[in-house]
Amino acid sequence: MFFSKPTEYAIRAIIYLSLHASEEKKLGLKQIASDLGFPEHYLGKIMQDLAKRNLIQSAKGPHGGFYMEEKDMEISLLSLIDALEGLQFFNTCGLGLHECNEEKPCPIHKEYQIIKGNYYRLLSQKTIRSMRDDIENEIAFMDLGHHAKKE
Amino acid sequence: MFFSKPTEYAIRAIIYLSLHASEEKKLGLKQIASDLGFPEHYLGKIMQDLAKRNLIQSAKGPHGGFYMEEKDMEISLLSLIDALEGLQFFNTCGLGLHECNEEKPCPIHKEYQIIKGNYYRLLSQKTIRSMRDDIENEIAFMDLGHHAKKE
DNA sequence: TATAAAAAAGAGTAAAAGGTCTTTTATTAT
DNA sequence: ATAATAAAAGACCTTTTACTCTTTTTTATA
Image (spheres, each protein chain N blue to C red):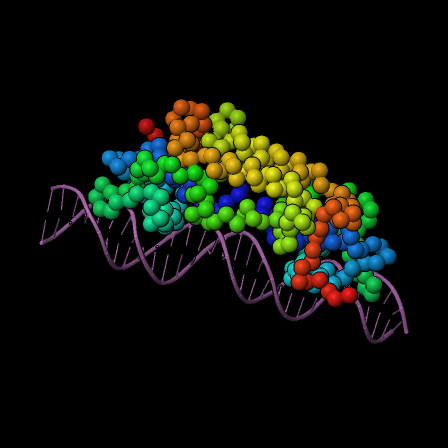
């Protein structure tokens, strides 16, 4: 994929929160990790990080857990990725060359720039809210697969 | 970047060979590694692997080294990557979901498929020969940067 | 005000990726 | 035949990434 495991976990956990949690119904780490099939304590640190950066909300103690405020849902995938691992990817040559630019382009420079541009656009257009809405309207899906809990 | 270090080293070394080596003028590992600034023995294994797969030619002993035959230059970046690390990338969901397909697309599925398709096309169109020609015609460049040897 | 619930924090472990060093094998030229 | 050259092979080391286990802190509520 394009980004690291922690970033993948963060993105999927955030989308999950946006769908199933609220200030009135916080979700505990244990439940999120088991529902998504992620390693609990590892996800714990990632959630901590997200909370510290104020990208999600957290509350300690009984009936505590994680949730998102409406404002948190405005964030785009791009900003999320930027916050978590930076956007160096978009400044990197497709063949790994250090000296590659418009004046001295590598053999795939032009086309690769366009592809990165399209990906950049995609990531900046998709907000947590827009993805949540698509899932709620069954335009998009995020199956839990074999991790889904019985009803 | 999109692929692993070994694949990056392989691609750049192959392009370098296509430009500077031939059956009459083989290049030794030492020179290739120092010219490109890659770790010598690590590159050695990668070259071994390429030779074993018959993607480049190698000869032991005095005046031995690596080179490419004209036929070797027909290979595309896509086939190279396929040979070195496989193409799972192109079958992977943009959000890491296991269950993501046309029927149950993830929230970025459609756009991501298009981007992957464009990247796939780029990689299959660029052959070693086409890239070598572009560099020889100064349409493209592959600077050695500070690794370049003095003339 | 004690207790239990839950996140926060920290230290340690495991696996994968990337890289080094040494020995062996094949080839060429003397 | 021998010596030199260069790739092939193998064992090992280092760093980074991914993950686990334990302890501490905060907070709601009985």
